[in-house]
Amino acid sequence: MTVSDLQARTSELTGVIERASSTQELEEFKLAHLVRKGSIAALFEDLKNVPKDTKPAVGKALNELRKAVEEKFAEKEQSLGGGVKKASQSSIDLTLPSRPIPVSAPGHEHPLISVLNEMVSIFVDMGFSVAYGPEVEDDEHNFTKLNFPADHPARDMQDTFFVKPSADWKVGSDVKPLVLRTHTSPVQVRLMESGKLPIRAVIPGRVYRNEAISARSAACFFQLEGLVVDKGVSMADLKGVAESFSKQFYGEDSTIRLRPSFFPFTEPSIECDVSCYICKGKGCRICKHSGWLEVFGAGMVHPNVLKMCGIDPEIYSGYAFGMGIDRTAMMRYGVSDIRLFTENDLRFLEQF
Ligand SMILES: [Zn+2]
Image (tube, rainbow, N blue to C red):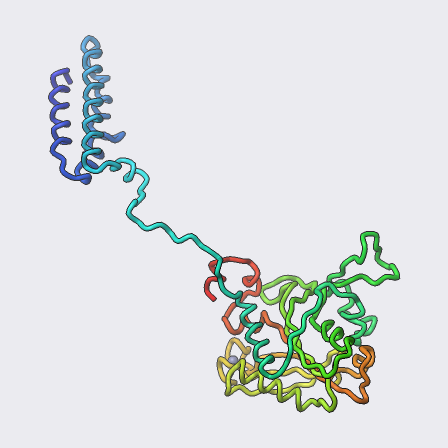
């Protein structure tokens, strides 16, 4: 390697750059000569084999070569539209349209709320009004007036979230703790206490249970309850409403069945099942091959409950029902984990 070799090489390389007619060709040139393993780097590598006496001159000529080639390259890059080096290094395609920015507004209903609203509107069409109540309740409304015996397991710490009524409250105090309501039934008590009869209302809302959180159960979920109190109300009315609701919500061809059950606040109590709307009663995974889906618990309002709420059970009677919204939404949308509803993951929520 001599000084004249390098001078010849310089004009050769700058000539190649000069003749390049596309950014593609420039890119190929760069890969062949200018990168860390390119031909110019190889010349620097060879410098150690140059005899000591000519090394300073050859080194200088080599630096001049690199400078000349780089300058020529930058100049050509500019004239061919520029940005070749930057764009190829970071692989940004400047012609791509930008990604849409996720905007929650105007947004849409949460799947739980849309199921709840659909149910509520079916009952509103049947003449029910909609009632709401507090989520932090007192013992009287959540348990006592609903005929829960003092030793009922729901009153246990295991099942209920208790709230201190005051900062200095202690366990064992005469004052009963407040609770996060375990059902929407305390709103029924409030409706009956108000003394405005007849009552025909549905109560949507959040309820809380001190449960281990799993794919099937959450500590906070939605319920929809209904209450009708009037003169001459019977189980037949309850069955008629249950049937009408099922046909509107689960499909015209759905049928219901009533099974005896037990709740402290109703007597008699029933569970209402609806024929599985997926398999039409033949049996499938959703209905656990029974052909039936458990839809709600219901019954005639217990005379004790009416009495405690100031209503004469000799004159008035009523029925009540309640259903879980989350499980219904899980069945409807084929969601296998209840926690997905509250994780606020847009990838999940945007599917509805
Ligand atoms: Zn089924």
